[in-house]
Length: 283
Ligand code: ATP
Ligand code: ZN
Image 1 (cartoon, rainbow, N blue to C red):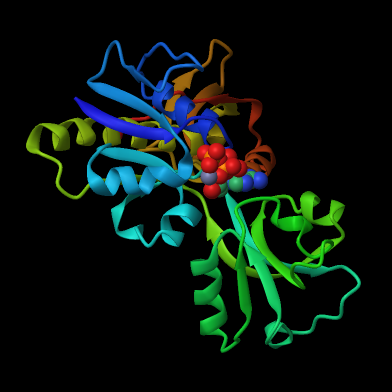
Image 2 (spheres, helix red, strand yellow):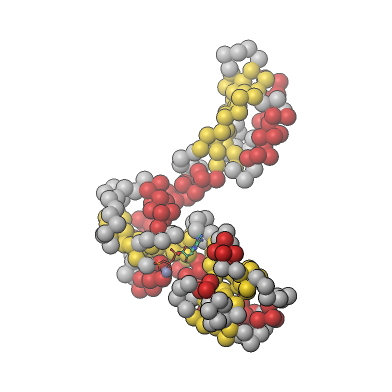
């Protein structure tokens, strides 16, 4: 049995649970319960506050966990990282009141900065040769300038709308974060094997998220040139259509290249292009 710690309720919770479900791991969850066991995989899930997850995994109370890199690195536990998961992307940024003049980080010399991430901020300031007074507060950091606690803040930003609504302007990016899977260093053989199985499934899910299955019709004399545009896993599958002189091509394309390829395919004479999501992808 492997024990995973995930955030009980917050910005990491839904995506963490979805990842576990997409790996084909079923469980009954109730918002009241602090732990649950999967019904079809040797996994027990603990629901915790995100800040506690690195510590629990380091101590072996949980074997693995999902947490934001911002929390992990702030707590100095980045060595536990196994895998970046690609969700809950956000950044830790410095912000100042909109109307204040700001030219460079040197403007923060001797200033008061409020944050929940004193270590990440201190590292950044040290790297840039700036000395400032860091005030560590646990929440509502964005109101610190308006109540006179600090001249600047350092907080998590994703769209930036919270900053704007508090009259602040983002001036420096201190740290880029996403959710990561972490693991205890001393897992026994049985737990290591379960983790391997889980990682195999996580990779299949991640590959599928980036890939799209593409089906299209091409005149036979264009099969060669269109095939060149479709990298696929190996080569595209080519099947004759009932209509004389036409073939159907099936392949896999990366979401990132998707639009560029679609344009080129149309130029090369492809028609009836279908793009379909892939649920799992094992290579
Ligand atoms: P807890 O009650 O578990 O301590 P919290 O209030 O500290 O929760 P959340 O706001 O739920 O934490 O954020 C959890 C993590 O999600 C953050 O540490 C960060 O990695 C990520 N995160 C925070 N804000 C955003 C955002 N706006 N967009 C995407 N990810 C975010
Ligand atoms: Zn927290």
